[in-house]
Image 1 (cartoon, helix red, strand yellow):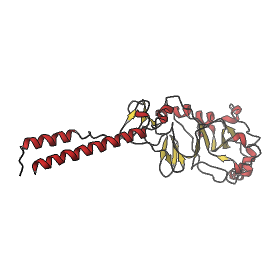
Image 2 (cartoon, one colour):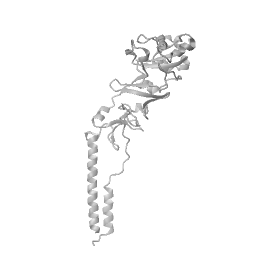
Image 3 (tube, one colour):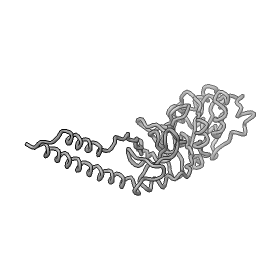
Image 4 (cartoon, rainbow, N blue to C red):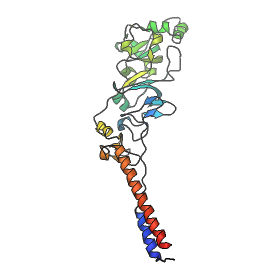
Length: 293
């Protein structure tokens, strides 16, 4: 039987361990969809994905929701070409259902970077005759696409209740987002509201067929995300500093683009490197056993 000094075996095993790559903490990869809705830049579901200014605005549970201080609004669609997102409040009154009123509140940054679009109209319903929008601020009310408050009360089963209770047609007001942004429903002195979007295309369309909800408009700053995507990466940011990152794999990121031209090339290179290390490890262990035996 061959004999080798224990120190030689120890040195060989020690060198083998040094060849192994150090453990890495994997970065979370960015989910690209929630249900049937694609989630692309500037939005992100997972923290560190998308643009930092839209951080934690979306949540994916069973469905995709847009989060504001006043509640969670179900995302109906995202149009990345027109840079709009359609949302719906499950607790909002519509033409077919009357629900307890509440204010629609956005954060200051949301009001700036992703406000309701100009073709989103808020209908303030069952207002008092002392309501500010019927007196000092009546210029804030308007008719859109030829529609009137009387038409809304007459066509909608849920809103007809206001007429029955008062035996008259209570005032209402079609207005823009800025009105509800600066004045709460208590200040406006209206008991309920609903909102409608794509109002520019609703001329001649009755309230039963309106699109209830809100359409938000957003913008995307030129941060070099296209360069990252072309290299095979996903655009994200450092959750500590907010600095843009190009996420290339579960354990590698870059500031601008993925190395070797694409994340796929990087993954392939990593696989080849791992295979080479495995082959060398097998060879070294074979030598060790040969010397021992």
